[in-house]
Image (cartoon, rainbow, N blue to C red; front, side, top):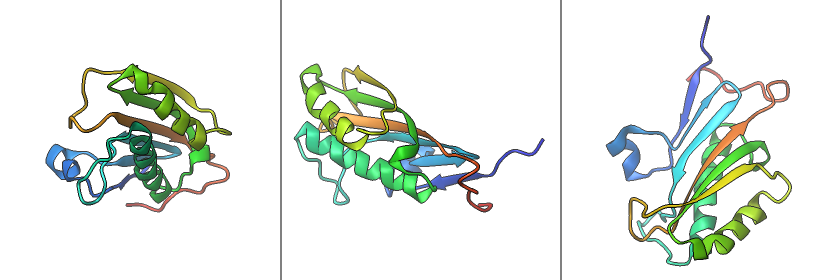
Length: 139
């Protein structure tokens, strides 16, 4: 049995090389986007949780697009917050992004994220329609 080619997307995070992961990986008609934190290219982080959520989705959806997907292909999200009081703010952003898509979603309150400035992090899973999307060529 031949396995579908593996394609990767990078976001420029310094953690990708240091830890050894990809921002997103596509195998066949599935795309998995790694936990995505709210970091700007200059390394700054806005303290507002809703702004952080928007930045996370900007990065995660760009990786999804790089691999041939769109927000409409997202079937599952996992959201991590460090303060339950911020759930409405970040959940509202999730609702803006996925109002019509309505993927399965989990929001988990965690003790901390890797960087203490981060209030929010998100993971995405997408499934593409193999009939409509011929896929990418070999890597």
